[in-house]
Image (cartoon, rainbow, N blue to C red; front, side, top):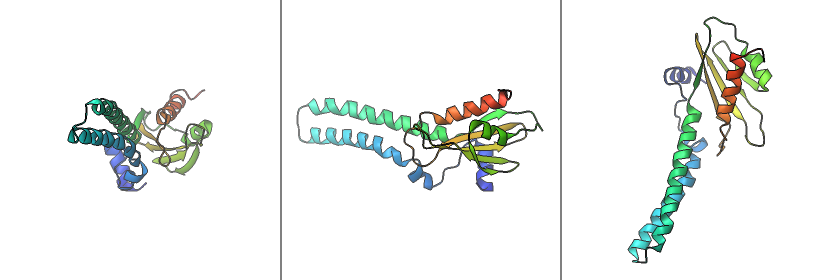
Length: 172
């Protein structure tokens, strides 16, 4: 992560869009777009060839399914871009490295303003990249899937909640 990325995240609370995201994160949108396109093509050729309206009854559910899948996928991708905040006391001594170890996460990069790490690969996840940006009175936290994982089963929310619970109740 460079200074431009860091500044953008601090101002907008989300990752900035880069062109490699199209292939790495948005490519999965090809599936719902296919369903929408398929339903529109069936409707078009049904109307063009003056066939009965039975084809139109099939296209409506396909179109609705594709639209719902598109909406769900875009919302998941956008939620994975966003950073969540955890308030902290100014000048408190956070031992984030120890918290990472308690959660079983691997630390990839650590300095006074940033810590990044990753979770382990499991049956339901290909692993997540955890990014924490340290500000004076709050932490910015993000959990993104590694690679092109089509379904994350809300692992980002689970990882955030684990860290939030550990930060707010460090005795556990």
